Image (cartoon, rainbow, N blue to C red; front, side):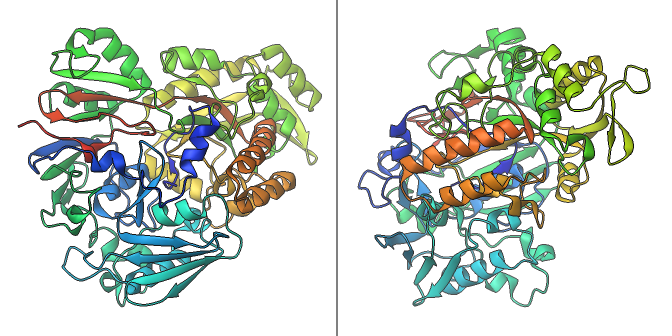
Length: 571
């Protein structure tokens, strides 16, 4: 499981075979084969990438934003990493893992050659410290902590440790291997408040790169460790081939695109609007569709089998206007999904009818037939049935709630760095206005918006989910307990039937049964409409500087982002 981020995500891969791949044994001899087969590559050159904002932290325990996550992938090693071609796991920081037949006990052995960037060995003291820190309720790690609540840690010796889980689930092995990231104990010795420690922005790293410099609002530079211990691992030998990685911090998407066209960004992941209006529109003569086109730049929408990004409007169910399920279902029928897909996403999206990705095995094949459609007449009828009417005869709906007249007015917030969400907000505002609903709009810088969400100080937000696991565990977002302590259930969704099914799914080891339970969970959540599920964008869209980069494969089967670690510089 890659830790889910607030960005925009999940879905396209419709077969059960895919699920089997992601649930495969970690000891399969095929795991990592795609990486062992990478050609020898010289460690050279600099690659320029883009961040949409300043990372809030550079620490894998308390990270909660996508920009920081993108950087941390180069700074910290996972116990195991996922082979994006097969979906299986191959060993990285851990040399091996022994999993008991009942999946309750996972015994890891760390690589004796693995060291921190200061040369000290990585040991189980670091593992123990990292686990205790993650589980400390005073540490800002509530979303990630929810996955490890039932874990017990045991240190066997300097290189061997155990995790014991009383009630394992279909993701227990994957979650632990891929999502439990170790930090150095020594760096945080004597720190009283981990959340404010100097080390959360100046990490001592275990991965292939070290932090070279960070200039806020300008750039963040990473430097390759040429003697990194990981290059002795066959799967890692020919990954991480750039001497330097420079992230240019450019919040404005239009400006970042111009930087890409000028050659100042080498790999540029873009949204559907940029792809539709520029790559396939005004600048189409500048771009090829693959690296063989002979053009200096090329771009493509890679339709991979990874769970796809999805975008939503989250209703704060603590607000009286959104408390009723009927009202939320009415709102779902006042949204013109096709208009959003065509005008904002230029046809690159598909309707979203499930919190697990509409095309994955977690969603029932007939769920699409239950999707809410744009139907203003039916939406208005449902609002009337739920008590909303023009009480003041001013074309504005009101309702008596707990003896008070409540006007149907609220504010939709979104992150200002995302112009597509601005357009969604405007379209929705106009549609709601016709129904007598006042939707105000407020744009906020992303980290500021996260603060409002953490504090539950919002009416509605346009956001998205990204980098999900196919064998999805819905506890993080949808269980009622996840609404507590700044958890990811930001809208305060609470359905006892959903909670019960989530707990069953969390304990299920059989991947096929897990899919069936998720189908029931997804259908319940969608029907309750705590979010207005807008759309998903399968795979990812990326552009490349053809004369600066080379790769054996530009994308693997389950990639949901460009696999930078496998690229290298043109000689």
